[in-house]
Amino acid sequence: MAIHLIRFCLLAMLPAFTPAHPLKMCVAHAQYNKSSAQFSVKFRFFWDDLEPVLEKRTGKSLDLRQVSAENNQIVSDFVAAHFQMNINDLPIVFKHQASSVEDVVLVVEFTGEGFRPAAEYKVEVQNSLLLDVYPEQYNLLRMDFFGNGNLETMRFERQERYLIKTIRPN
Image (cartoon, rainbow, N blue to C red; front, side):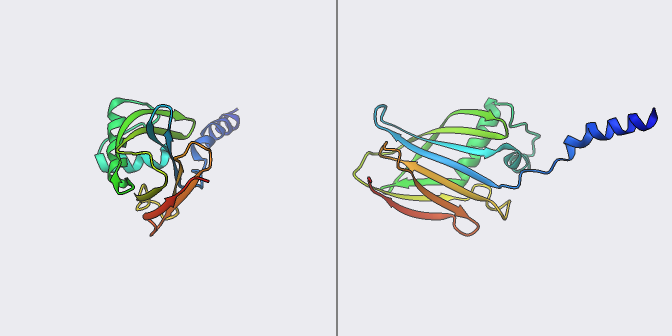
């Protein structure tokens, strides 16, 4: 009987010892919506990668699976400190719109002020989100400025924290 109880306890604890996901990445999607004249950026973080970084930074115990005004502000401040974007030499100012949790992913949405529609775009991005914390971290920025579904991508990793790309309609 005791051996069965020990086995049950060990099996019950097994999920606590599952390894963390092997992929360290953040994906952002920037898009200009012509019909609403709105520029937006949506970041997708693994919340279990981001949470300990923000806890260390703030000195607070956090649960990013719970969407709250305080968590939104902490994440917004972190993004502002580690992600800057200029388009055609104009800085984009981000304003938090919404956050949600989809399984292991924290989705954080911003609108961007300062975007001006143009025939082509010179995009300058400084992106160091989590790159100082996880050596294997990389970040992707996918962009759709013309609304045609043709995505342009920038990849940031290790030393590649500042990239410039010219985007033209296809």
